[in-house]
Image 1: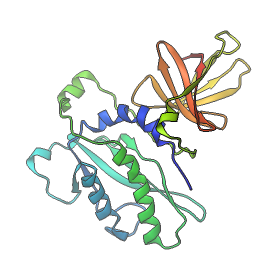
Image 2: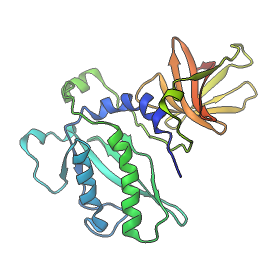
Image 3: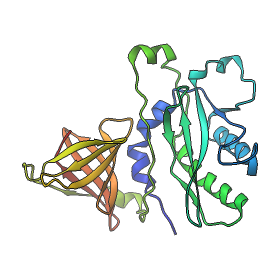
Image 4: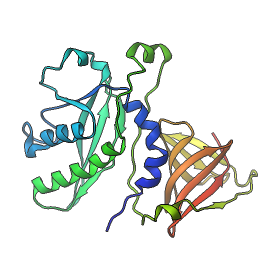
Length: 257
């Protein structure tokens, strides 16, 4: 049975990108998704709006007249459901974009091996919406559009990556094994910019880790070999945290960004 590494990612990363989503009053849902032929095919648009409202959002169809309180388009998010290519498997993921078309949030990818399209699309949509529910959305409203423009608030794209591991009881998860690394030039990693993040290389040069930005500069979604977790800054040092054999590992990493 598949289990997703949401406990660690959503606990550490979730609070950072939920704040940016909370700045928006409502979500606009299109009446037709690009990968489908007709409006509301397989009832995906209807189910999307239903799930958004269930998750706490105000939601409107793109052809629906919105109340005056929701007339400012840059106060709104724009929902989209997109399909990934897959062999004998259906894959869908959700994006929430701002009024300029920039992705504010992207969900994990829902997957299904069902052959019937209705069943496959429904299963994928439900899995993708797990990320939306994890946001625990609540409209903040303390940051207006004018304040955003004045302060130059920069919205980062955040993607929740799927990681398959066995979850552990909460009391066990609090036990952290710390792996200390000697900080010297031999172990120092150098950050090279890549799309949405960095690759960390050693002096060889060899790519040791890849990290993806979140909306918090002190937190990255990280991959090192077969281990996937988060790279977090604590007290001026970087730590790669991940699960191994049902044990939460915190490995000190020396990085020069």
